[in-house]
Image 1 (cartoon, rainbow, N blue to C red):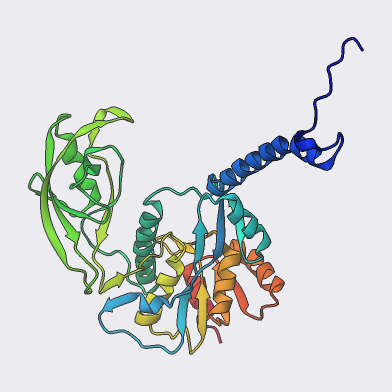
Image 2 (image 1 turned 120 degrees about the vertical axis):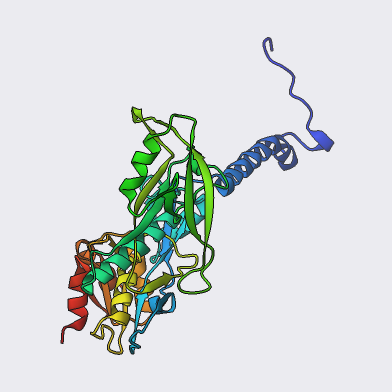
Length: 357
């Protein structure tokens, strides 16, 4: 018949329409489908998604992480800081597993970005804030300063170059002039032209093997650059705050715990060891909350996971930021937990709650 092609013979002598012939014709399509599936599985296993996952973390005893160089009160009971494990930029299998895990929480990567070093600095700041807040609660405020403490260093500036300044360094002298307050550093830097160097004397902690931590004194020349926010001003690239002299030395070794949410724990433990009132009274207490130097308790992430951590520690009371009390109670109710949950807004409120009959 015109316009048609002869039908090819089936392979291996199989009859037309036979099963072997049909399998042969379908084989390339199956191979292509398997290849595409393999590629998709490979992508799912290797590509990081824009989600993070929170899971319950440990709840260590804050008292085991704090050393105070002076007479302290030995109390029965314990105060536990609560943590979350964070998996940043998870892959598809981890994301699916988290959705199926009632103890995990999936959050947007944009809400909790993984910025290298940021959580370490936040932990350092939380320790300083908590210590000052604790001494304020104990009636010991208006402490003297003996230097300019470097709280942060601006990336790309002379101070950030390897071998130069570090967060936690204390500047005690600039161009031979004693520095006891942060405000004394800026005017000395402004006397230099761009490209000139200011000579700094710096005290740096060298370890956490003793309390107070051993230190060494360094001298370095740090180049002055123009301030990008003010063409008429110069800078070296550091943010400084007073290095306050404490009545007794307090040393906190957080290990691999990062972030600011242990502030309430540090402050309560210091008050419990140095104050007149027994805050624990034989109880296992857990808590979470950021803290500023005035004792204000701030919100944290992963409160539901921290509630689980507190419960696993057999805590009878869990202190949380006041604004997150309802969320923590809802998490506890979902697990039929009998642990008491209390929201607080300040360190003083937390102390009052723990000393109440």
